[in-house]
Every structure is written in structure tokens, then in C-alpha cells.
Length: 149
Image 1 (spheres, rainbow, N blue to C red):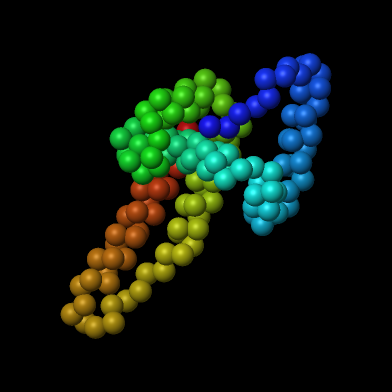
Image 2: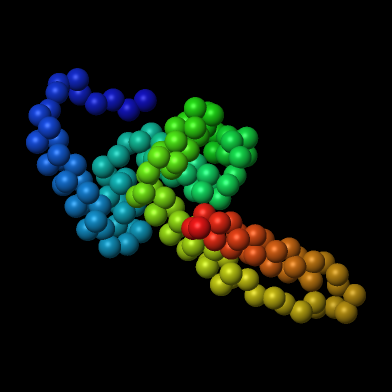
């Protein structure tokens, strides 16, 4: 578990620290810069914790249930409930970024989906796989629209 110093900071100084942190994150230009920045700044455990929290939020925004989230990410029900509570009580920043990420995922999935004709006249597997991918893309698109609405 991550720890912070027990020595108190005055509110003004702490707010300056937060402001510097937010400004630093806002200055990141791309995923590689973000990767380097967070790798240099955070421990392995802190990076893992933040990544898992974000993934929980994304799955909650997609209306996944606790059991699916718990088994996929490996977090407790209390962690899921805490993040669900954040999303339901005005975590506008997390919700906005989550919706943007889900939209990007959906666009990438649709962009990479290229229907192919079967190689052989009797090949039933390829059309079935294509139909499955198409239905998956449609499902993700509906879930994203529900999350935005």
C-alpha cells in the first residue's frame, strides 16, 4: 500500500503541489511522454493501482456487473463500490475521460473491422466470424451511447 508522510502540510502549499502536478500532466503531448513521466514518477504499485482503478471505471461506464469486473481485474467489491460511488456522485473528470477512452476504443474496433469474403465457397467459418465481430462492434457502440446519455 502506498504511504504518505505523516507530517502535515499547510493547505496553500499542498494546493500548489496539486496545481504543479495537474500542470505537468496537462503538458504531456503523447502516450510515450505519459508512459515515461508516470514510469519515472510512480512506483510499480502506484501505476498498477491507478490503471486498475481506471479500468474499473471504464467497465462500470459500460454497465458491467461487479462479478465480471472483479474476475477480470482482480479487485474487491469494496474497490468497485468506491469507484462506482465516485462515478455516481459527480466524478465528472473521470466520467469524461472514461467516455472519451471508450469512444476511441469503439472507433478503433470499427476501423479495424474489415468484412472479408470467404476464401472457399463452402467456408462457413469466415462469415460467422465476421458477423460476430460486427455484432461486437454494434454492442460496444450501443454501450458507449448509453454511457454518454
